[in-house]
Image 1: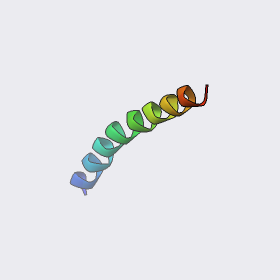
Image 2: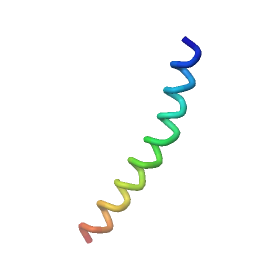
Image 3: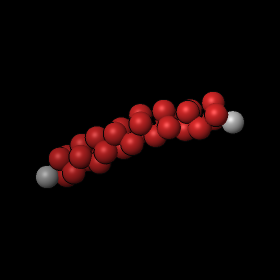
Image 4: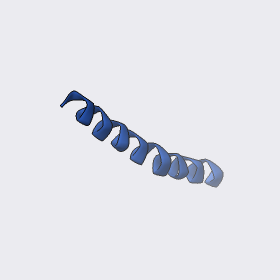
Length: 31
């Protein structure tokens, strides 16, 4: 169970910034 929690936190640390970067990238392309 602990491994799953660590995996989720690790995933969130990678996916979160990635989505933020894509969002900023998308807004720059619209301008």
